[in-house]
Image (tube, rainbow, N blue to C red):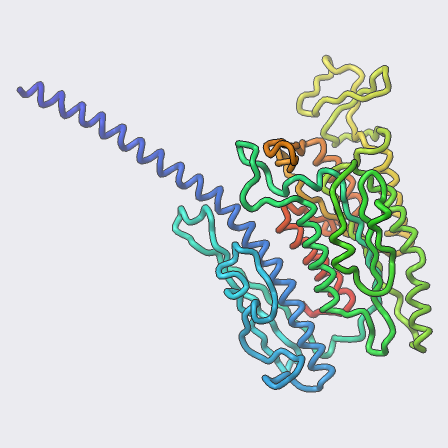
Length: 453
């Protein structure tokens, strides 16, 4: 009996051990999923924070301009000024993505006028809903941004010229988010071209609301143009440089089709910028404006891939990720640096293989930056490596792939074209694309009209 009891006890102990292991494994999986999910939740909070900074800057600027023009802090009875206190983002007409807790209703905008310091302080705060972090017991992530604008630093705005160079190639029909394992679209995915339209319309309308297109003296100060492109500039969709802002109708006509070639539109942007000083000077002189300011000039280049038009050109580089060898037929074959073997790969040279259209694009960028004082922002859109639903109307499971080669080529071009490292922005999806345009909008406004912080 004793032996039977002992055997039964050992058997139960073994069962207990297996149970303990299962519990430990489940706990570890939960923690890993929670940590990975926290990164996703942090990205959503960062997107909401970028949006909030743009709103904080806009409200602070409007408040400072009101006080300077009216000579007093706005009250509840003021027609245009925003009174001191708390306001919801929804109340002021701002929108937020659905991952923000209670949407725009749940975002608070606090306005504080400090008449001693002669400045307005705007604080925007709220919470994003978590997705995966709920596993760890955290249901929301708070965010908060602050902007300060001085009454004394608000001066008449610099005139400005802005050109948008926008990719309308076939890949812009793909989803903005990676496909699910069954090749279907994630629930929150949308065609990239739709995200671009939303971002551009928001960019232009909010820039108009913040700056307007005329100075106090009545003369025009803002000029904009738009160059959609695929294999070439799509002339039927071009909005030539002109006074005022691009309208929604001009943006809505964009469609995705064709290959990618940024060279022609960037050459056109260069030709536009060569004459912008004269346009602004003539406008100011026509209104008898003394000592007109030189316009600030900006170009925004957005692409979701590398140029696919033009012959290949080789550039030796000791830091390039690929070794290349030209074949007898004139083509090229490559091997990744981590796989390169000097014995096996005779005749291969380390370097970058770039399209001739990359070179000519960069020539336009360099001329604009060095000769015409143009500030160039670039955006790499939906370049995360992997499969995307291609939105093929005949096959809802058809996918297309962004590989390391496409990403590296696109990055090389966009970073080289940008005015600085901070002028190149990654936009992983449509939400981040809108945040990228918001950030560029803030940078432009802060240069045109100085914002203290």
